[in-house]
Image (cartoon, rainbow, N blue to C red; front, top):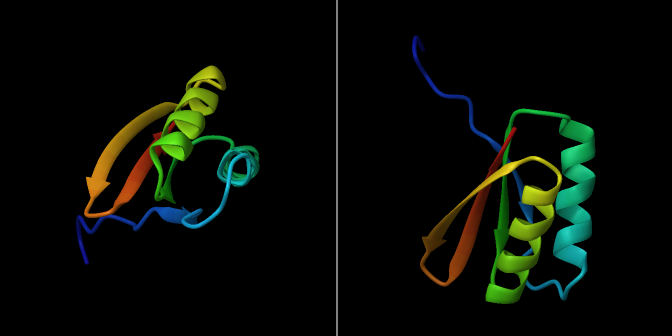
Length: 76
C-alpha cells in the first residue's frame, strides 16, 4: 500500500531484570546500526537504564507509556 509505514522491530524486555533489557537493546543497536526499533519494558528502572545507554551511544530515545508497559522508540 502506498505510504504505508513499515512496522518497527520490537525487543520485548518485559519481565527481565536489569541489566538484561540494556544488553538486549544494545545488541539490537549493534545489529541495526541505524534506523528505528522499539524496546518494550515494564519498569521505570529498565526505562531509565535503556534510555541512558541509548543516548550515550548516539541514539534518540522517545518514551511512550502503553498502559502498564513502557515503549521506548530508539532512532539513529
